[in-house]
Length: 534
Image (cartoon, rainbow, N blue to C red):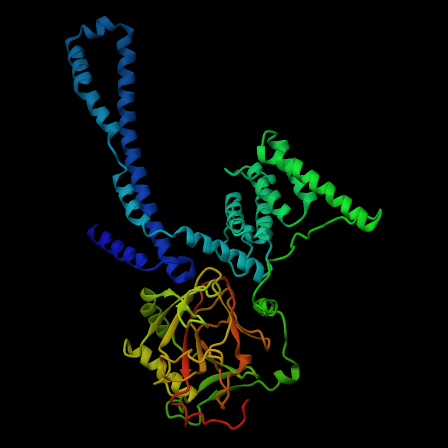
C-alpha cells in the first residue's frame, strides 16, 4: 500500500509540475491514470458502504422477526426471564452498537484521496482550451456539430458521443467569447438532441434562451422572434423572453418598413445561412492553410511530379552511409523537401519520448517586437529540449542528421521534442529570422536557421499534416520518417516559400522532434552563392 501511495505521489508531483493539460495528449494520458485511481477508491468506498448496510439489514431483519413474535403476546413474552434480560441488553448495549455502525464514516479514504488529487486536476482554462480545440477542428476540417456530437470522426477507434449537456457547455464557452456563430451551431445541436428525446438536466428553455440571443446578434430577427415565441410556449412567465418578444417585434417592424421603402413592394426575406460567417481572421492564408490540412488545394502538375524521385542516398559516399544508405524521397520540388524513411528506430523514438515527457512545457514563440518568449493560441503543443550528452541515443541521432545533411551540428540547436494537444497545431510561420527580426537568434551567436530537420515519431489517425500554404505542399506524418528542407538560400537570403504550419490533430497523438541547424559552421559545407535565390 505504501508503494502505491509513493507511486501516486510521484505521479501527482509530475502533474503539479505542468499545467495546460490540453496542450499535450501525451501528458493527458496521466490524467486517465489519475481518474482510474479515483474510480478504484470510489469502488472501495461503495464496498464499505454496502458492507455496513448489509450488517444493518441483518440486524433489522433479526429484530423484525423477534418483535413480530413478541407483539403477539407482549406480557407473556417479557414474562420469560431470558427474554426480559435480552430486551434490557439490546436496548442498553446493542442499539448503541447499531447507532455506532450507522454513524461510522466510511468516506475517509475516498475523500482524502479525492482531496489530494483535486489540486492537480485540469482547470477551467484547460476545459476552455479543449472546447476551443473542438471549434478549431470543426472549422479546419469543415465538420458539422452533428458529426462531432455523434463521434463520427475519421480514424476513430473509441467512438464517443456528446450529450446535450456537453453541447450546451461547448456553446456556453464560445458564447462567453461573443462568438455567436459557433454558439448558434452548438445550441442548435443541443436543442436537436433534446427534441429527439434525449434526457438531460439542461432544459429546452435554457437552450432556446442562448440560441435566440445568438441568432439575434447575427442579425436574423425573424428566427430570433420565432425561437422566443417557442420559448414562451414552454414557459409563459419567462421574464427575459417576454421583454425580448416585444423588442424583436418592434425591431422587425422597423426593418420591414425600411426594406419596403428601399425596394418598393418587393420585400427581400433576410436569410442568414446556418454556416454563416466566421469572425474576421488575422491570418491571410487561412483558407489555403485549411484546404491543405483537409488534403485539398493546390496540386502539383504531372510534369513537375515526374521529376520527383526515390533513391538510396549515401551523401557523397559518407563512410557511415556506404554500407547502409538511407531511403530518400522527394516530397516537393520548390522548396526542395525530402523525406527519409526508416530513419529512426522504435527504441530510439521510445527513448526520446521517455526523456522528454517529464520535462514537457507549453511551447512558446518569440515575440517579433520584444523578442520575449511567450505562449500563443496558435501554437498548441508542449515541448522539451534534449542535449547530446544526456543519452547515447541523442548523440547518435545528432550524428545521423549530420551524416545525411552534411551540415555541422555543433552550432545547431538542441533536439526539440514536441507533443501536440487536443487539436494541437502551429499556424503558418517561418523557422528563420526575417529582416525585420534582426535580433531573432542574437543570443545564440550562431546566425540564422539555415535548415530544418523534422522527425515524425508517431502515426496520426487523422489530421496533423505539415503544410506549406504558399506553394501548396502537404507532408503527412509517418512514424519513423523525417523531412528536411533549407530555410535559407545559399546566398543567406531567406526562402519565403518555406512558410509552413502544423495542421490541427483531428484524431490521434502526434509526437515530433526537430533540429534547427544554424549558419555558423556551414561556411565550407554549404558555400555561399553569388545568386540571391540559389
